[in-house]
Length: 142
Ligand SMILES: [Zn+2]
Ligand SMILES: [Zn+2]
Image (cartoon, rainbow, N blue to C red):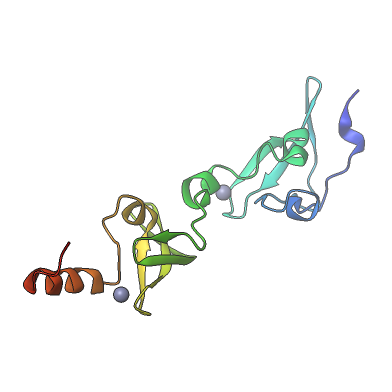
Protein backbone atom coordinates (compact mmCIF):
# COMPACT_ATOMS: atom_id res chain seq x y z
CA UNK A 1 0.00 0.00 0.00
CA UNK A 2 1.14 3.47 -0.83
CA UNK A 3 1.02 6.12 1.85
CA UNK A 4 -0.09 8.87 -0.52
CA UNK A 5 -3.15 9.13 1.71
CA UNK A 6 -1.04 10.96 4.24
CA UNK A 7 -1.18 14.44 2.84
CA UNK A 8 1.86 16.30 4.07
CA UNK A 9 1.11 19.55 2.26
CA UNK A 10 1.97 22.51 4.44
CA UNK A 11 3.56 20.35 7.14
CA UNK A 12 6.29 21.62 9.33
CA UNK A 13 7.87 18.39 10.49
CA UNK A 14 8.86 20.11 13.73
CA UNK A 15 5.13 20.37 14.50
CA UNK A 16 4.41 16.82 13.42
CA UNK A 17 6.31 14.79 15.94
CA UNK A 18 9.90 15.57 14.90
CA UNK A 19 10.76 18.65 17.02
CA UNK A 20 14.29 18.99 15.70
CA UNK A 21 13.48 18.49 12.02
CA UNK A 22 14.55 21.29 9.68
CA UNK A 23 12.10 20.25 6.98
CA UNK A 24 8.79 21.65 5.93
CA UNK A 25 6.56 20.91 2.96
CA UNK A 26 5.10 23.75 0.89
CA UNK A 27 1.30 24.07 0.79
CA UNK A 28 1.21 23.41 -2.94
CA UNK A 29 3.75 20.56 -2.93
CA UNK A 30 2.89 17.61 -5.15
CA UNK A 31 4.10 14.22 -3.97
CA UNK A 32 6.01 12.14 -6.48
CA UNK A 33 5.47 8.42 -6.68
CA UNK A 34 8.48 6.25 -7.43
CA UNK A 35 7.89 2.54 -7.24
CA UNK A 36 6.12 2.03 -3.95
CA UNK A 37 7.63 5.11 -2.38
CA UNK A 38 6.26 8.61 -2.09
CA UNK A 39 8.66 11.52 -2.26
CA UNK A 40 7.80 15.04 -1.17
CA UNK A 41 9.56 18.22 -2.27
CA UNK A 42 10.70 19.22 1.20
CA UNK A 43 12.36 22.50 2.07
CA UNK A 44 15.14 22.57 4.63
CA UNK A 45 15.51 25.46 7.07
CA UNK A 46 18.64 26.54 5.15
CA UNK A 47 16.59 26.93 1.96
CA UNK A 48 17.67 23.77 0.18
CA UNK A 49 14.88 21.91 -1.55
CA UNK A 50 15.09 18.14 -1.80
CA UNK A 51 12.85 15.26 -2.70
CA UNK A 52 12.58 13.21 0.44
CA UNK A 53 10.64 10.04 1.14
CA UNK A 54 7.55 10.85 3.18
CA UNK A 55 8.17 7.97 5.57
CA UNK A 56 11.70 9.19 6.29
CA UNK A 57 10.42 12.68 7.03
CA UNK A 58 7.72 11.40 9.38
CA UNK A 59 10.00 8.96 11.18
CA UNK A 60 12.70 11.59 11.68
CA UNK A 61 15.16 9.46 9.72
CA UNK A 62 15.87 12.53 7.58
CA UNK A 63 15.85 15.81 9.47
CA UNK A 64 17.81 18.15 7.23
CA UNK A 65 19.52 18.35 3.85
CA UNK A 66 22.77 17.63 5.64
CA UNK A 67 23.40 21.15 6.91
CA UNK A 68 22.25 20.16 10.36
CA UNK A 69 24.89 17.49 10.66
CA UNK A 70 27.56 19.93 9.58
CA UNK A 71 26.63 22.72 11.93
CA UNK A 72 24.54 21.78 14.88
CA UNK A 73 24.94 18.17 15.93
CA UNK A 74 27.19 19.00 18.85
CA UNK A 75 25.13 20.35 21.70
CA UNK A 76 27.48 21.80 24.28
CA UNK A 77 24.86 23.65 26.32
CA UNK A 78 26.02 23.86 29.95
CA UNK A 79 29.06 21.71 29.27
CA UNK A 80 32.20 22.92 30.97
CA UNK A 81 35.64 23.00 29.39
CA UNK A 82 38.21 23.85 32.06
CA UNK A 83 37.07 27.42 32.94
CA UNK A 84 34.47 27.82 30.21
CA UNK A 85 30.82 26.86 30.30
CA UNK A 86 29.15 26.81 26.89
CA UNK A 87 25.95 28.84 26.97
CA UNK A 88 24.51 28.86 23.44
CA UNK A 89 25.67 28.55 19.83
CA UNK A 90 26.02 31.65 17.68
CA UNK A 91 25.16 31.85 14.01
CA UNK A 92 28.80 32.67 13.37
CA UNK A 93 30.98 29.96 11.81
CA UNK A 94 34.74 29.80 11.86
CA UNK A 95 36.14 27.40 9.28
CA UNK A 96 32.81 25.58 9.31
CA UNK A 97 32.90 25.30 13.09
CA UNK A 98 30.01 26.42 15.23
CA UNK A 99 30.99 29.24 17.58
CA UNK A 100 29.62 29.02 21.11
CA UNK A 101 29.09 31.87 23.52
CA UNK A 102 30.76 30.81 26.75
CA UNK A 103 31.04 32.10 30.27
CA UNK A 104 34.37 31.86 32.02
CA UNK A 105 34.72 30.88 35.67
CA UNK A 106 35.92 34.43 36.36
CA UNK A 107 32.63 35.86 35.07
CA UNK A 108 33.85 37.11 31.70
CA UNK A 109 32.26 36.03 28.44
CA UNK A 110 34.10 34.78 25.43
CA UNK A 111 33.30 33.00 22.16
CA UNK A 112 35.00 29.82 21.06
CA UNK A 113 34.51 27.18 18.39
CA UNK A 114 33.42 23.65 19.24
CA UNK A 115 36.76 22.34 18.00
CA UNK A 116 38.84 24.69 20.12
CA UNK A 117 36.78 23.88 23.22
CA UNK A 118 37.02 20.14 22.64
CA UNK A 119 40.73 20.04 21.91
CA UNK A 120 41.55 22.36 24.81
CA UNK A 121 42.94 25.15 22.65
CA UNK A 122 40.59 27.56 24.43
CA UNK A 123 40.14 26.92 28.14
CA UNK A 124 39.27 30.34 29.54
CA UNK A 125 38.57 33.92 28.54
CA UNK A 126 42.30 34.48 28.84
CA UNK A 127 42.45 34.70 32.62
CA UNK A 128 43.73 31.13 32.98
CA UNK A 129 46.97 31.91 31.20
CA UNK A 130 47.38 35.00 33.35
CA UNK A 131 46.71 33.08 36.53
CA UNK A 132 49.12 30.28 35.72
CA UNK A 133 51.72 32.85 34.73
CA UNK A 134 51.30 34.45 38.16
CA UNK A 135 51.44 31.04 39.84
CA UNK A 136 54.65 30.23 38.03
CA UNK A 137 56.12 33.58 38.93
CA UNK A 138 55.45 32.96 42.60
CA UNK A 139 56.25 29.23 42.49
CA UNK A 140 52.78 28.41 43.66
CA UNK A 141 52.26 25.50 41.35
CA UNK A 142 51.89 22.11 42.92
ZN1 LIG B 1 19.70 22.43 5.07
ZN1 LIG C 1 38.18 34.21 32.72
